[in-house]
Image (cartoon, rainbow, N blue to C red; front, side, top):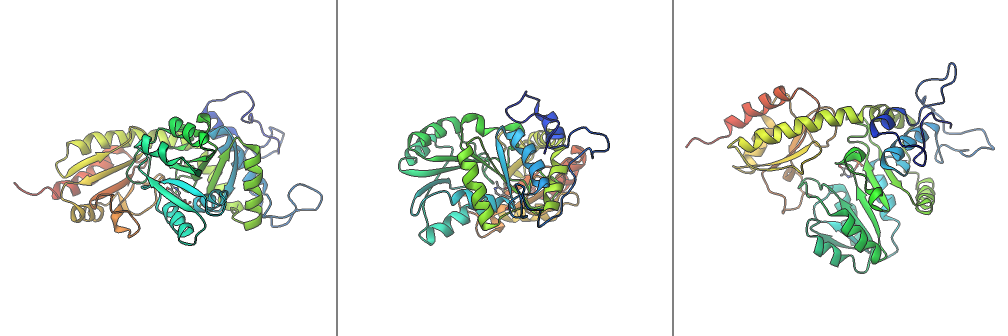
Amino acid sequence: MPTDAPTPAGPTLRPATLAVTVGRPAHEPDAPLNAPITMASTFVAGGDIEYGRHGNPTWTALEEAIGALEGGRCLTFASGLAAVATVLDLVGQGAKVVAPRHAYNGTVMQLADLEARGRLRTELVDITDTDAVVAACDGAALVWLESPTNPALEVADIPTIRAAAHAAGAYVVVDNTFATPLLQRPLEDEVDLVVHSATKYLAGHSDVLMGAVCTRDEELLRVLKGRRDLVGAVPGAFEAWLTLRGLRTLHVRLERAQANAAELVRRFREHPAVGEVRYPGFGAIISVVMAEGALAADLLTRKTSLWVHATSLGGVESTFERRRRWKSEPATIPDGLVRLSVGIEDVEDLWADLVRALDDLVLPG
Ligand SMILES: *Cc1c(COP(=O)(O)O)cnc(C)c1O
C-alpha cells in the first residue's frame, strides 16, 4: 500500500510527525485521509494475502507506523502476550533464557509455564545488577529485558547487556511497553527484537488488546511472520484500526502524562504517608511504597474518586493498584507498593484527589 510518509530507510521525520503520518494512503483525490478498516477473512486469489490470517491492509498501516517509530519493521499480534509467546518460541528445546525477576507478570508466568513443561530453562536476574546479568548471558539463547520493569521501575544498561548477550550468541529482546519508542528505541542499540503491549500507551485508550514485535533483522521478521501465520495469533482488523487511531496522538498524550507524573513525584516525596517513591525519571508510571504498608495501600486505592482502582496502564485515564494484591507478584515487591499509571487529566485535580486520601492515612503523632 503506498503511503505518504517515508519508510524507516527514507528521509527522517521526527517522531511526532511519524506518529501522525505513517501508514496513511497516498494523497489522491477522494482517497480517505487515513487507512480505512478492512473487514475481510478472505481476499481474491492471486495477491499476497489470500486469507485473513496472513495479512490485512489495516494491520499493514499500523505496522508501518509502529515500525517507523521504533526504527525497524513491525508485526502486530492479538495481544502483548501473544507477541511474547511468539518470540519465546524462537528458542530451541531446553535452551536457556535470561529474564528479569521483576517484569510483567504474564511474561514471568509464561516463562515459568514453559520451564515447568521442560520447554526451556530460565535464569531470573536483577536487571540493575549489570555484572550479574552479563555473567548470566553465558550459555543463554535469549536475553529478555524489560526496562523500566513492572512494577519496580528498574532500568537496565541495555547497550552493555546487549553486547554481552551477542558475544554469547543470544538474541536480545526488550519489552518497550513502559517507555514507548518516544522515550527509548532499543533497536538503535542493536537489540534484536522489541516487544510491545500496544494495549497500553500505543493504543492509549483502555479499549483494545494489541501486541507488536519490531526488528531490523529481515530473517527474524520472516520467521516470526511464519509463526504468526501458523498459530494464528493475529489481531482483529477493528483492533488494529483503533490502535492506529490511538497511536496518532501518542506524543501528545505521553508528553502530558509524563509532565503530570513528574509533578506528582515531587509532591509524593513531600507527603508523610508515602515512604518511598520510585520513578525512573521518564515516562508516566510511578510506584509509591506506603509508609504504613499494605493496609494503607489498599485504603488509598479505595478512597479516591478520580483515580480508578484498576490494573493495566498507559491509558488517558489515571489508574492505580496495590501490586501485591496479585498472588503472582513476587515477594520482593513491597507489600505496600502502589503502581500508578498517570493519565492526561489536569494534574491539580489528580493531586487533590490523592491528597484527600493520603492525608487520611497519616497516623497522628
Ligand atoms: C500488559 C503488558 C504485557 C502484556 O500485554 P497484553 O496486551 O496485556 O497481552 C507485556 N508487557 C508489559 C510490560 C505489559 O505492561
